[in-house]
Figure 1 (cartoon, rainbow, N blue to C red):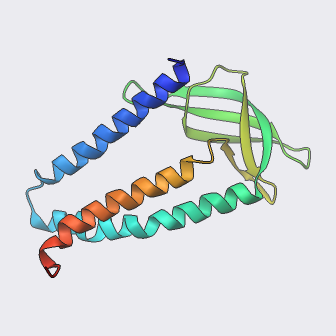
Figure 2: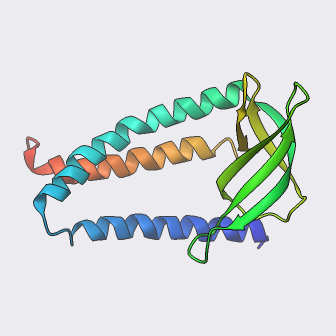
Length: 160
């Protein structure tokens, strides 16, 4: 198995376990007010935030310009995090050199080239180029988690 594929498989597995752990932790919450807050407000908020997130990401990708940046700094986020904080330098269309930081990036060697996207109308809004599927998948997970939280909160109040 290719290293990148194995890393993705591990990250998705860990992500799934985290979601399950969060749901299991709700059963241990002592006060009903906290469950009410998290499930009654947090669930619907996630459902509503999912399409907002997706639209924002799609709009950014629609106006973004591709460029190649160079890793200037890479700081490991610690043993509990499978990512690092990258500082990337790139040259915008106007010829100005710019820096941006991504705190959820895979670790890269200093000086390595990375593909980025940035908004030409606001070049300080730059991001690492990630798969176009990342935004819909993130929005789907947000909506599903929100729907499950909402269902378990409201199920006793639904007719039937």
